[in-house]
Image: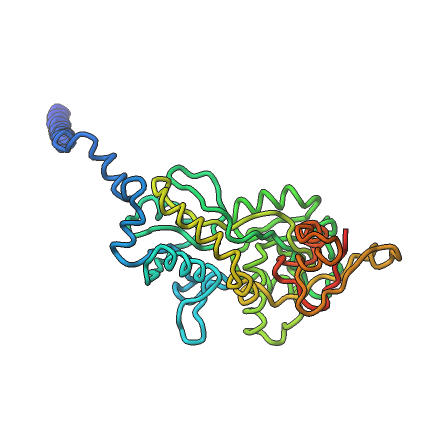
Length: 360
């Protein structure tokens, strides 16, 4: 084929491709122009009810739809927030709050929708099936989301082998530590811990690495740590007692319920339910049912060796508030007692008989 013929063919192909592109662009323009003005905004807004009408939507359907991580594989459980009970029915710390919210807003059913932690915010803002997220969700700034009052305060804790000499995060210099893959946790650990040898993000298998001597410590959310250690012991009875929490409440964090920013009436109802639940005996019982199981930490050596140190051994039926009344004549002083002991105790509702408290 001559050079001239090749040029003519190339020119014709170029003209044909240009015509196809032009047709596609014109068609796209016509379709866009045929849509009602503002239809894109309407589509995004249709995910939620108009402002202040979320409760009516939920009550009309008769169920509260809650986005939750139900485990891997889905529905197998993610203790302590969601876990089937002995009868196979939904239960867990977060599920009990979901049931309380549903009852308080007048619907009989909670429908759980499974998601992973990383997809919570996108599902809530784009999926019209979702009413709220309740699954150990730590608040952060995200357009389109707003947060309830806290329903649980917690902190990161330090987990080591039972025979480890590590007592506090000050002992992690030159050590190999791990965290769950979470940006907020990583930022906190980098702020708190100095001179570590390595920092790994590990999603599972960290207890085995500690017990096999391949990892020195794990820093992890206490609620999940307590539950996962219990599960680990049930699966590997030979490991029972070989893991130890050396320090509690390294940080001050909270779990909150997430709702859409437009759902102001739902947010108000959720906050009312949280406040009522936290004041009820059901809340303390849920804490004991799902967050207990690990021992408190011994008194610091400097307290043990100080003859003038003030301490109190917890007796049956005592709480931090009742101890504060006995010692200080003021039940509100329980907060001061908690601050003096929170690195040794997991939660203010988990003070056990025989625990020895430092009295400030």
